[in-house]
Image (tube, rainbow, N blue to C red; front, side):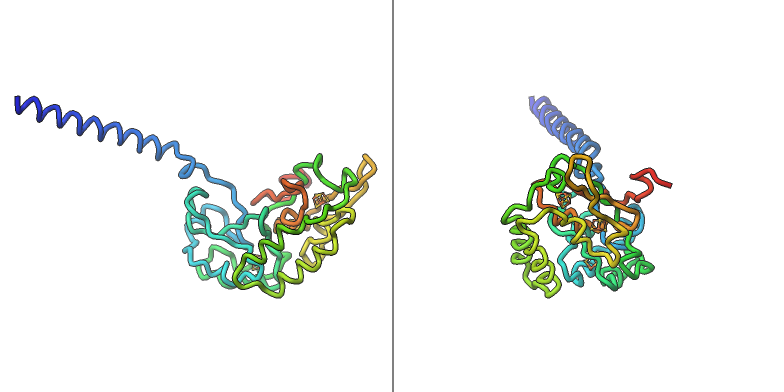
Length: 245
Ligand code: SF4
Ligand code: SF4
Ligand code: SF4
């Protein structure tokens, strides 16, 4: 009898472990947290994603020197690469600082020090993903309170900077006007090489992206539509997306 009970206990123990093992094993294989490699917007100068993940020591130096609070560290919900820096352009794009301090601060080579000025940055490419919602195309004026999101963001940070105040003041001037935000707020030294408002066949205007775009995501941040109409495709280059030689 004792033997039977022991066997049953062993059976229950091992079958439970087996089921747990299978569940965990399946989880490890199928978990989106572990395999769902999200294509994230990395800070300026980031080397190829595989190398970046190998080189980044998750020290957070890049985000500490960013005067716009553009860089975050990925948490578990973001999948693999926990603790690595990324930019969520829906909240805060990169504002293309002159000397690219985030790159200078990186001690590991994950951000390539050859990236020395805004024109060297190649984070991705801007795309008018949702033309149907673009205010310029539909000739809709920029609504009041569109900039609350940016004000709230800056108010939420501990050490608001002068640079952030400058952006907010500029943004405040757009309320109630025709929307040219993505083109007018493009932060690179020669914004017309990246984006311009052109006539649209429907009578309004539309933003057109050019090869000078560095994929900083500032346009995505300031686009006043609920889901930004213009977005950055991380790590995609102009020629690849627009199919131009
Ligand atoms: S270039 Fe400037 S704004 Fe952009 S991530 Fe680096 S430090 Fe931040
Ligand atoms: S910011 Fe640009 S993409 Fe967004 S609504 Fe205005 S014109 Fe359209
Ligand atoms: S068009 Fe947008 S993503 Fe491209 S450089 Fe200008 S603000 Fe940055």
